[in-house]
Amino acid sequence: MGIEICGIGGYTEVGRNCTAIKVDDEVIICDMGIYLESYIRFTEDEDIINLNPDELISVGAIPDVTKIDKWKNKVKAIVPSHAHLDHIGGLAFLAGRFNAPIIGTPFTISVFNAILRDEKIKPKNKVVTLNAGSKYKISENITIEFINMTHSTPQTVTIAIHTKYGIIIYANDFKFDNQPVLGKKPDYDRLRELGKQGVFALICESTYARDAIKMPSESVAKEMLRDVLLGTDTRKKAVIVTTFSSHIARLKSIIEFGKKMNRKIVFLGRSLAKYALAAEDIGLVNFSKQVEIVKYSSKIKRKLKKIMADGKHKYLLVVTGHQGEPKATLSKMINEKMDFKLSAEDLVIFSCKTIPTPINIENREHLERTLKDMNVRIFKDIHVSGHAGREDLRDMINMIKPKHLIPSHGFSEMREALQGLALEMGYDKKRIYLIEDGKTIILE
Image (cartoon, rainbow, N blue to C red; front, side, top):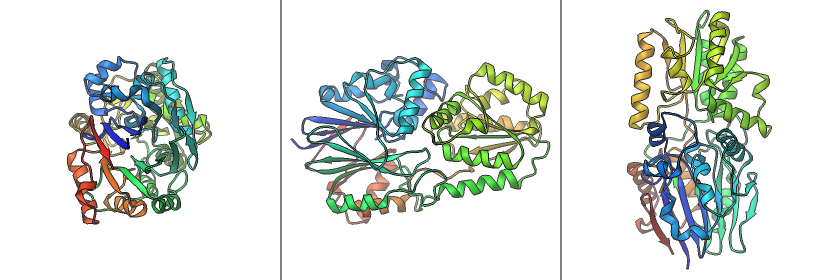
């Protein structure tokens, strides 16, 4: 019967990642994420809230798993690769439709459990925790293996699916960071070993396939932060940093420099609390001993009132809202929905890139215009990406030498760029598959 692959989501956009891999009569689903642009447009929120799954499917916010209805009873496992919402955000809504366990790394499962607790959703699926470097036997014919990888959230893995036809590798997302701020560098040795054994297919992210670079290490972003936070005159000024809540390594660096600034550090926002406490639950960090974490709007409002009374220059505030989301903490602060007032030459630091979708661009432009009208100092793009550049992608392909290549995690021009790279490397175009959301291919 062979291998069939359905690109349920993430093959027409950056997000909503979900791939079903059918091996004979058994199916593994890798990732089950949200499409942040559609999700935020529908909810005006950056965090998961309990909504009707069918509505979310209809607006394109979560994967349309009805595309694999004929495989529904064949699903043996749901395997998220890491804890970003565009990879696990749909689990709470969709996993219960399948009689299959959810298998993830400790941090990924900790974040998933936090979402379930917050929204009072009771999981129907068995949940299995698997460490990087470990294997799990799904059935007599399928074993999955987690390979340690670096990305912009902890305990990201590349998934190897061992079958009688060969190994299928799901590398969606990754970067090759040889000096990570948190965790170990990628397991290159294991990737090379698998390449020697014979990789049947590689499903590979393509987000930065057009950029002829090796993506810089997270240690570079740490030095960029050091330059801004310790190399700028911040005396008597408010300092606000916003970044991806899931970026635990980045938060670790911000805390380190906040201490050197002799400021009290406060995290403000639901998603920051969710990810920070999820990392604490598995012993990855101990932020609660170093910072105050305030989760809900009513408490954030009271805290900001106290900060204004104490003197805002005594604090380093880390807040949600780096994409300009209207309901996030930063937007509420500058729109005076909180008891906090920015003054001329206060600092707002965006330790992130604007995710290039229309709604994010519009929200961020509005946010920045408001800040500029206040004469606030804005520091943008204090960031390096967690995604592979074109030369990292070349290295991945060279290491594992797949027979088939399926570009994923990108708009058509991104996936075509990865196809172009593979053609440049001597691959036959017939073995490179540019599929769209909801489409299935058969590999031989």
